[in-house]
Length: 374
Ligand code: PXP
Image (cartoon, rainbow, N blue to C red; front, side, top):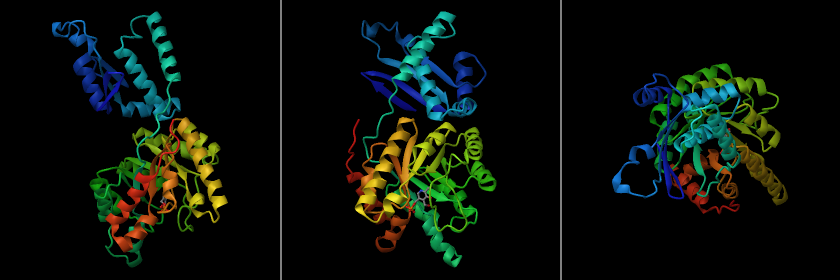
């Protein structure tokens, strides 16, 4: 439940599932069916209250949205789920303000016109606080697999990262199971309290595991058996059909999808068009640049790609190769919502302990100035 306000006006927004919205629809509207959005105006409930006198009522009421139906509709309309949510919130808000398309054809036309007007004014709000830090604990599993035993356990590592302030845990379940194992992801699903992001290739076996696991989100990445680590972004253009099919499966299960992409607007556009909710922009080339000139060039590519994705309405994350030197500059971009960092933090943890390594990275992110305010 989110309480939102503007200019002294307030409303509550509840994002729920089909079962709960159906129950609310049945209880308060006598309709035993789930739906996409419900509006409960507050005004009518207190309009006769003599204690309020002439006072303007600034409590608008409640909007309830079923995220499951929002995903299904986004799938049918081949829309990004954020776009669908914008429409549902706008539609619900207009109902709170007294518009009602069910009243008459004329009223429906008035409401749809207002909807279009409000949606055309929508500007995604930029982050004004520090980006979130999601930590990839694959490398803890890499050390464990070197001996094939039980230590160190990525599940314990994830708990320490969360205690130190991480906002999410990322693990990559590779087809060859070189580090993270099936046992890890199922235990993490039970223990992670922030957000579990399952990184994965879009292959059938792993998709089925992800659908069973129900992580908080998935990040689709290219996967080659011979590579040491993920080497570049997805070719969303070339693999459009296969990736679109995977997105549909995840959306049918209400699992948001991120796509790991190079800082290339053409790739980002297609990721958006096939329904990704997030993109994670590959920062590897920026981090690996050997000269200042190259690094500045790579940074400007990340910066403009993040801007492009943000303006499409995508939630923009960044990651790969970020360390204690390269992170601050990326964290200063007001378009970036979250950074996904693994190797640098786990490497430092060998010397400082994991908690200190996480806190040191958090301090760098917190200290990065947001350079571009809207
Ligand atoms: N994001 C993605 C998509 C990745 O594949 C990886 C590596 O597993 C990371 C972020 C984290 O990269 P690093 O370990 O270099 O911080």
